[in-house]
Length: 141
Image 1 (spheres, one colour):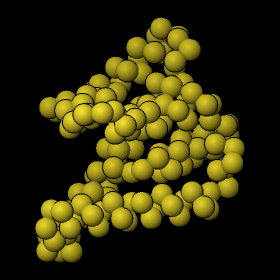
Image 2 (cartoon, helix red, strand yellow):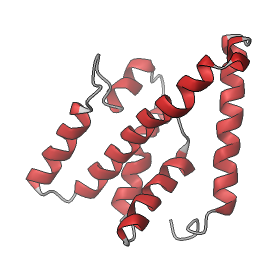
Image 3 (cartoon, helix red, strand yellow):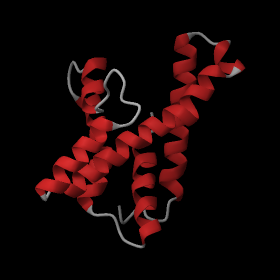
Image 4 (spheres, one colour):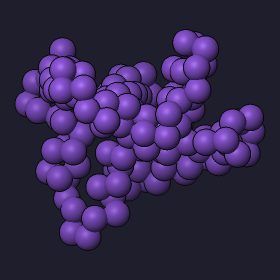
């Protein structure tokens, strides 16, 4: 999955396209699901739960339900829920466009699972590092 700066970059870009500044609630929501990695003893099932992953959710119904719940309730958490949804959809797009093609590449097929994981995280860490040092909105966000 992408790391925090990628998620923040998506959040900022979504708002740039609309000509507005993202709210703090939206930004926090856009990184919130990955807080699961800080929970002691959190496992894979916990990550699936907070990322609203079901057996077959190819139409993103669980994400849609999250948004509808907060839109209809008109709660103050709407911005947070929208950022949370942006995170979840970014993760899913990342899997389709980055992770799956890497898994199918000849480079990854010749690596052990541990080597592939290490290479993947080294590269995603570098992407986050590069973005962090070059995005113009860093101080604002």
